[in-house]
Every structure is written in C-alpha cells, then in structure tokens.
Image 1 (cartoon, rainbow, N blue to C red):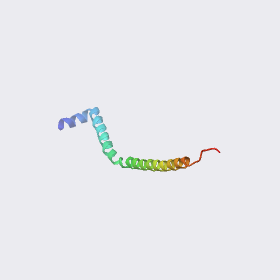
Image 2: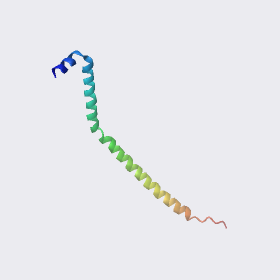
Image 3: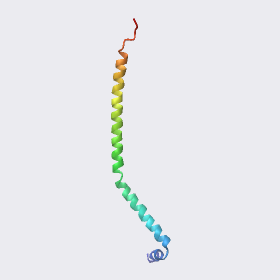
Image 4: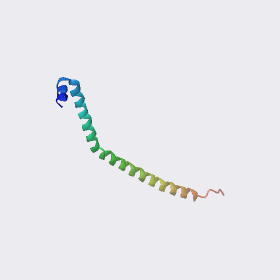
Length: 75
C-alpha cells in the first residue's frame, strides 16, 4: 500500500486516472436514482397510447357501423 501511495504522490497520471475512476463510479451510482423519472414517463406514454388506440377503435367501429347502414341504392 505504501508503494501505491508513493506512485500516486509522484505520478500525476496515476492520480488523474484514479480521480477519473472515482467520477465514473459516482456517475454510475447516481444513475440508478435517475431511473425513476424515465420509467414514469414510459408509463405515462404507454397509458396515453393505450387510450388513443381504444378511442380510435371505438370511433372506427362506430363509423363502419354507420357506413354499413347507409342505403346506397339509387331510385
């Protein structure tokens, strides 16, 4: 351990590498907390798409029923 400390004290590249590693590790750990918000948006978008498809299906059925009920014979 003393040898590692001596290398870190004398070589700025090793210290920069460890500092970079600490930043990456902290970003990875912090990233787990940020997953809640995108997951919420995914649920909102999925529900919205489901509602739009349901309303579109209902409207399509009503329009087709109305179109099939029209009398197209000419006198």
